[in-house]
Image (cartoon, rainbow, N blue to C red; front, side, top):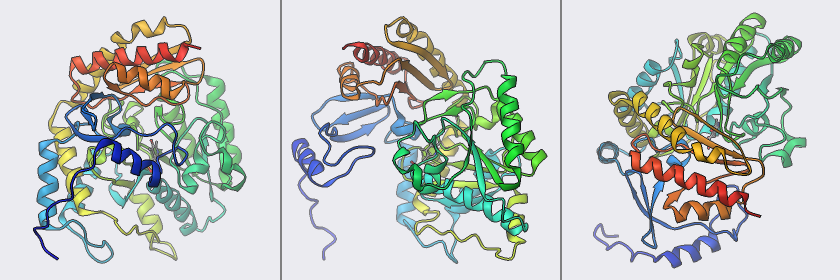
Length: 439
Ligand SMILES: *Cc1c(COP(=O)(O)O)cnc(C)c1O
């Protein structure tokens, strides 16, 4: 074993593609995938460089995560510094500076007294932990019958078992497992529109559904304001206040899944801020490390933490091997410092304005049902499922990376995107929408 062995010769793009097809599964895809995947050689700022030399403007922030763009010098420095100290130690019985610093910062950024932090390795796991916390809270209080959750339709909470069971039962990709999933309570789809007036009939429906199941409900869980992978739908924040009141009245915990919406994406640090509501439990992930490493967290209030601690089984039996990975925590701390030091709110608003203006032409295209923007999120919804390969090709021809799904051609660009980047992204979304309308 030598420390100076030369690195292996780099693979060519075609070699990467061949090995990929042979050995590697991709998300939500068959294996091998006839559509294939584009080999990436590098990424910096808002640009993704493909192995064939093409450079693409990133419209996706790598699924909401890379808010500062790629290869950021500040995040690189934080990662290198932590790598030289230690990349990981187990979290059972040990702790470290990156974890406590990050927990302090999350507690400071989060609304209310969500000051108790359980670190997890992915968003889906943070949802599992949130469910476990909610159930254990009621178990500790001597109310084990409160073991179900209520959510509204159109949601997406991840791909693990409880997370799947809380995602939309029809339009999520999990309907195959419906007969095997835990049965939770579903309210109807929240009425669309961030600015839409409150639909009193829907508010009544929520009230009746919560009241009708209160004895068996541990918690209500929703994505606040923006339902992401379930359909990129926006709703009126007042429904969150309604849920908060109903939960308080009926003794039910309120969980917000801020995995996609957290860290500024919707124009508030957390989407809960649009409603001025504090949940009892909150999940964060995705942009937490600025898109560098996988890390998520489940935050809860003192009431929940103390309730569990006072129970017959005070320990929360959950402990991912890589819990509070120091490398991920150090990068997350640096990423949140970068975010809070900068004018993230101004940037997010400017991105939304720019995309809304540049996407005006898309609203007039045949087969486009609606164009909507909120914060640094833009959606062109078509009246038919998008042919992903064709729409992606159209975006690639404009030099932009988009990843449409179902009827959604959408973008959530890095906050550092320039006006030119945003013009290109909007043009690519229009091109993808036009391609989607061709028969
Ligand atoms: C992405 C996402 C998840 C799952 O997070 P992973 O890190 O992919 O497991 C859960 N909830 C919401 C709202 C998400 O957007």
